[in-house]
Length: 40
Image 1 (cartoon, rainbow, N blue to C red):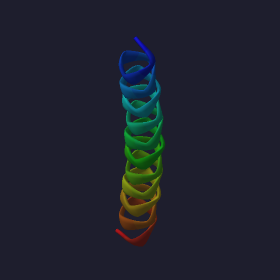
Image 2 (tube, rainbow, N blue to C red):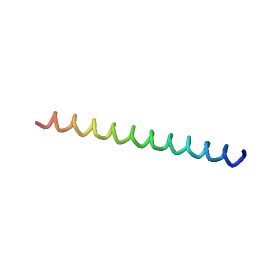
Image 3 (tube, rainbow, N blue to C red):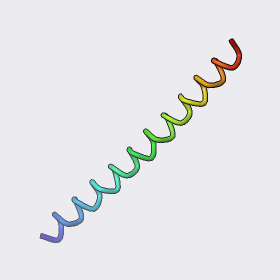
């Protein structure tokens, strides 16, 4: 049971990291698009 809990915690941590990564990527993409729009 303890191993299962550890696995779940690791999975949640991975999901959080993935979400943070996606959020950063999305923000970078939006900034890039805004810069392009302003430049045109």
